[in-house]
Image (cartoon, rainbow, N blue to C red; front, side):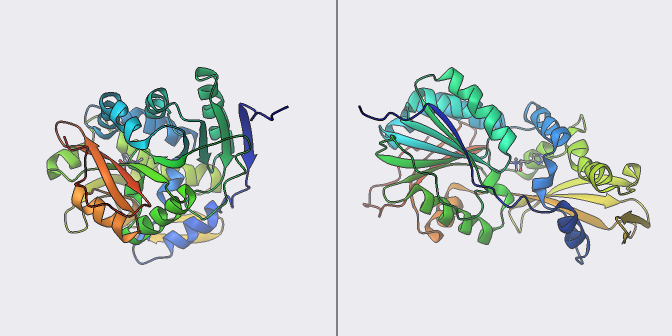
Length: 334
Ligand code: AVJ
């Protein structure tokens, strides 16, 4: 009797969970104090991010979703039949559902460092697509790792899906390393489908990170609240202010927390001083023109094969492959 793949499985590759205290101490010990943006997403931070995605000023989420709604047929044709779809990250799966509905992949392989999240979101998705093989993996996709054996899955190509412009959090060298790693996981003849926010006028960018309801400010300040909660620190949340601005030279939004006065904060026996006006750099969100993103991809040894945008050119979904280009112009133009 032929073995068939179970429809749902979970594989824990036991990623290094990192150490919040060590990262906070290292970040606060630098001349320009900083915190890694991955720590935004505790329960409260994840809820605040969901709220950000609904804000009138925050265009990326709804724009990328609209691109997927309008263009998923074309995208599915470009990726081709028989794909194993590997998703990095396991946030809200709206865009993924649109893609899966159109692509009908032979397997869906969500990968996330948060075991509980990837389990919950993929189990829910498996209920919507009862015939789809779902292979959930707990791993750190920013590091090299080996996919589990895809027993019983016969895919013609592996495609890594990385929506949400999360790639914008990486510096150029980090993004290059990330794309190389993702390309290695997609393998020969594999593809990468990546959402990236486009460059646009600074006023629109600044508004998206300085919303009138102050949700982004709460999201930013939650980092300090989290340090208080989890590390027993004594940050006065009223003495720090949210600041976000587009840095045109670097091509990125920067988020900072500004100390409103000279103050010191204790964290597990360590004392950190903050001068009035001094900042903690909490996030970069790089913006790429189509040409810049394609250049980034080439720098990682990948071939830009096409892209899809919205009518206002706010956001782009790029398709990259590991194959050599055949000289055709990049299709999928608006
Ligand atoms: C989840 C990294 C894509 O950069 O726009 C939203 C995070 N920060 N508002 C972004 C974020 C402030 C978001 N990414």
